[in-house]
Amino acid sequence: MQTEAIKRAREYIKEADALLITAGAGMGVDSGLPDFRGSSGFWKAYPAIKDLGYSFVEMANPRWFKNKPALAWAFYGHRLNLYRETKPHKGFDMLLELGGQMRDGYFIFTSNVDGHFQTAGFDKERIYECHGAINHFQCTKNCTKDIWDAKNIQIEVDMEIFKALNFPLCPRCGAVSRPNILMFGDWNWNSSISDYQEMRLGDYLERLRDKESKIVIIEMGAGKAIPTVRMFSENIAEKPNAKLIRINPRDTSIDDRWGVSIELGALEGLRRILE
Ligand SMILES: [Zn+2]
Image (cartoon, rainbow, N blue to C red; front, side, top):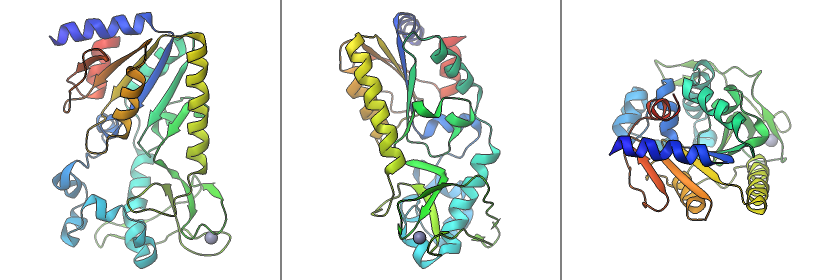
């Protein structure tokens, strides 16, 4: 059955004029990033947070930047460092090559905040990061609409006591700064970069529609827990001229009319289809 799915996936790709890459948290697992799924997964990556008794949802809350900035920055500073040190896996290269072969190009829709599509060499004008990016910072008070690049900022975290030894301040007002990521219960996220990226994606899809381009969507590691990415893929897949290849070891359900589901991790799935 999986052989049949691989065969159909290859046909979709062969017939396509354009590639939509949609990625959820599972995409990064093959690069060696921790899987936050469920409290056990999250606490395995952060034993210190287990001792505090907080879930991922509780930890990914902007109030910590106000109440306990050294704790907030221990979590986000560690993630920033981890994403910087981690090399995107080979599947990114395979997708970049495939995107380059498409007559009408590619676009990426990702809920990941690690910036790994940019690191892997994808055109930043063709990426929509729906939850923002960890390598951009903003003011916690949103004193101005500024968002700045974090590339020259180093955060040192003492993992023993789970505290950031330094944390960045807003250059304008001196308040604590924060990553430009959408958190839970977040009213202060500055979405301007993300909004702009979304507009570009909208323009791209409109151009594909006008040209009646055939689209293949390759979705990877997008689970049901936070279904933003899945819903986007399915909305496109419902339309004529589009086919969805869902690659995920779990949550494999798919409407047969939309495409195929391949029960593998991102890298292994891509290898099976593209090599
Ligand atoms: Zn400020």
